[in-house]
Image (cartoon, rainbow, N blue to C red; front, side, top):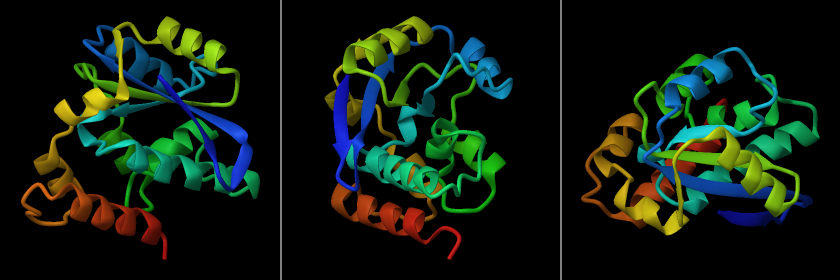
Length: 174
């Protein structure tokens, strides 16, 4: 698990964990659908995440929107998932970037709390192997990302892909 501090929101701690071999995705998805407040983290399909920068782009927008009272979803954790999308359709973002019943690679993001408490909470919720975030390189599906963000074939040029994805995320709603 990695913990970051947002430059624009230094009091907010962002905890990012990558889980592989997740066995309870169906239970987690049902808890999310039912808005179970005890879950209190964002769960993202890891195949659609390029790197930590991609995650922090969504987190920064969600935390910024929360700080000015402009959340479009019910809490900052669901807003993170929404902010991965490029459209104003909340349901589409949840369906596209959220977990499904058979998702086995999950990124969990938690805002606030101490690093120890956040890691403990995420390990209690997500039944899988907590692995280094660097393992994301082996999980990310660049073709799926290109199709999802409609950016065409970028010949697996990660720098170009993240640039185009960041542009799409930033321009949502404008």
